[in-house]
Amino acid sequence: MTKPKGAQDPAYSIVKHMLAEGGYLSQFINFKTCDHGRTRDAKDQKRSNMVLISVARQILHKCGFSIWWVSIPRSLPLPAVLIGVDVFHAPRSYDPVTKTRLGKSSCAAVVIQVCHSHDEAEVSYYSQTWRREAGQEYDLGEALEASVENGLRLLEVSPRSCIVWRDGVGDTAIPNTLNQELPALRRALQKRLQRDEGGGGKSMKMDVPIAFMLCQKRIATKLFFEGPQGRVTAVPPGTHVRGLEDVRFHSFYINGVSPPTSTPKPVRFVIGHQDEELEDVALEELSWALCHGYANWCGPIKVPSVCQMAHKLAEFAGTLRDCGETIDHRGFTNTLYFL
Image (cartoon, rainbow, N blue to C red):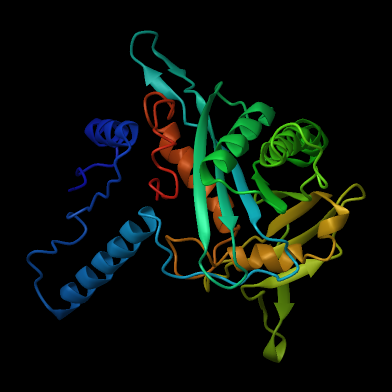
């Protein structure tokens, strides 16, 4: 479909909402950027080809195909459930009746990716959104538990490990977030194992090992190194720094991108919880590997792909008039319709 001229065109969000509610995949193309039917010269044709190739790649990923994939550490028990969690806070909108700026409901998103192989693209997806009060970032225990329970049931998988990347949590809120969301996640995993055991028998292993990390992008830390001839520049992409830690939790930094004309900020990954069964798993390597797995970008991004997809889904659903409450999540299983 042709995308409307303006990004704020109300018809665009209405049509996207109708398609999402009905469970239909859609892709809009903005012909204002480039008229693909009437290219003027070779340069314009090259730009058109790049845009159309990117659109074709995005459509394939929306349909659930994996054009590329990354290798994950072999110490990670499979099937592994990788979860990204984020909350979108819509900007305040002007109400002409009250003549004030009113806050719109926030939207939380949970994206679940199940990996069945360390080296091949044997993955499956499930995603779900939840409407929240305006500005509410925390208390996602019930939403996380329900999302994981629904996803594992629809994907018919019995996980052996679970890794979570939670975005949007500040230092002061880390303990409360862990106390509220970690038990909810463990309950959802236990329910799945109990169903696999028949509901009445006693499982030999009732706990799925969990690692729970919190991604912090809005930090003041910047990383530099002294290059040739004493020139100080930003560290290259993929730089991993350990040792700058909080007294309460272990943490590490990954500099995912390094633009040539600016000083990028790394992402701080706080390891809020890591079970003993996952101590041999290099969470830094896993996080950096997944930074290359985002379907909308050929190179690395700042956070793991499931975390970025949760951000994208929360933003997409948060712009709809009902904050994604009527999206057919079950019908969109194994698709990335929100890209």
